Structures are given as C-alpha cells and as structure tokens.
Length: 232
Image (cartoon, rainbow, N blue to C red; front, side):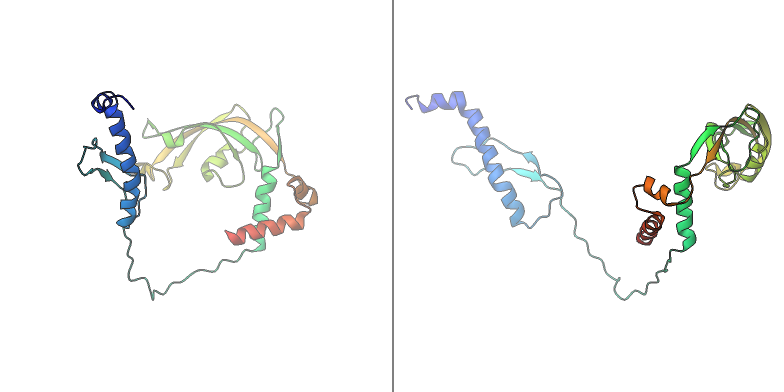
C-alpha cells in the first residue's frame, strides 16, 4: 500500500488492463447478445479487444454466427399420398435367411471340387475393354456366394464348373450400372480365376438358432424381426 501509484502502473499496468478488459468483455458480451435477441450457433469470436483507457468508455467488437431466420410458406393445404407398406411373412422369411447365412459354418471344399450354386467362392478377375484395362471389371480375391444373382449372369455361368486354380476368359457386355458410362454396351474381356471354394452349412431354422441369438424361441425371433421391419 506504500508503493507510489505510478510505479504500480509501470510494473503491473498492462496485466491489470488485460484483466480489466477480459472482465468487461465477459460481463457485457453475452448480455449484449441477449439484448439483441440473437440466436448464436457458435461461441462468439472477439474481433477487437483494446486495453481500457482511464476515464474513457470501453468498446470492443465481436463476431457472432447466428441462426438465420427460416420462413416457410405454401405448405399448408398440400395433398400428399403415402404408400402403405405391409410386412409379409415372406419379408420375415427373407430376414431369417439372412440370419442363417450370417450364422453359417464354412469349410474348405475337397481338392478337385467344381464350383457350383450354393458354394462360397473366392474369385479374382482382370477386365479389358477395347484392349485397355477396365478397372470396374478388375478385382482381387473377392468372396461371393453362387446362386444368389450377386454376379452378372455370364460371369456366374462361366465360374460354375471351374476347379480351384483354373481360369476362364469370358465375353461380357458392360452393364448400365457401371460408373464409366462410355463403356456401357461394349464387349469386355473378363479373365476370371477361381481362388477358392468353401462349402457352407446353414444352421437349422429352429429354437436353437433363436437361443444362439439370445432369444427364447423361434416365434420370438420372428416377432422381433416383424416389429423391426414394421418400424423401418
């Protein structure tokens, strides 16, 4: 209390001024936002915060991102049509089949086994169009189940009957769903190689399958599936 005021200002003036400015901003910024009825969507960002001057009004500026006003007109009285979707037994059966396949056990097929519908095969393929590599027909060691129409018909037909390690070159018309639209309808050369065959054993559709999933019985599993599909 005995130090001269000018000495205190010299040594501590800048830090005290910063603390005062910080307190002024804290106590007035959010009050100003409320007074202006602003609806900020992020924390305000100080644009200027000068040191306060003795016996002068203190001013500062801040940037505030606000939620823009939203006014929607013309929607009342619209006539809308909603399709009613009924969950059928076939929908539930299809979901049960998906569950069976997720719970299926697989084992490598015996040497010399030929690829057939119902097997899980691993294939690699190199594709060309007009003699140039076609990336969308080129992939390495992709697993796929035969007989489920996951592949183009020409490709699946070419794979069936192959043994592991064998390959075949096929002529396949480029379908419409490719990304490179310039190739649609052209003939592609696809050399597919059978990398592996796995036999799948599906679990039986019974109470034991439901219990493996933490449910009491098959009826409860069916009900859960139907309820989920109804909500979706």
